[in-house]
Image (cartoon, rainbow, N blue to C red; front, side, top):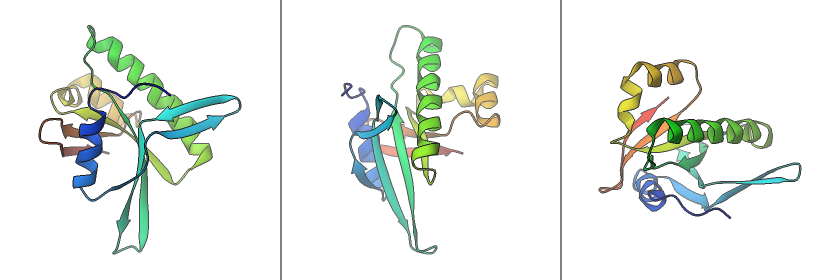
Length: 137
């Protein structure tokens, strides 16, 4: 199993505070002989719809020497996990959890391109307060 990201617990706690139940930590997925571990999975009861919303969350800190290298790695991992998840559990949505100080990328042309191209969906969280500050479709 891979090591937990620096902000793993903060992102997890933010979701719990937002009414989510953590169901798996980590969330294992297999495809053929390959085993992957998304950081965690969660569910939230949508009472008005009488259904559950199910998500898998990959946490990224972006604390490396190069923001672009961290972004490229995060997106590669996100695309891989999303492809497998779409086949294994099509009703579960994959989200990238990103600390709010890195989320400025989504106001820049590159971040807007990623969202408009439906290449990434994200949860922005405050790692100190452990709260979700924004959902990016």
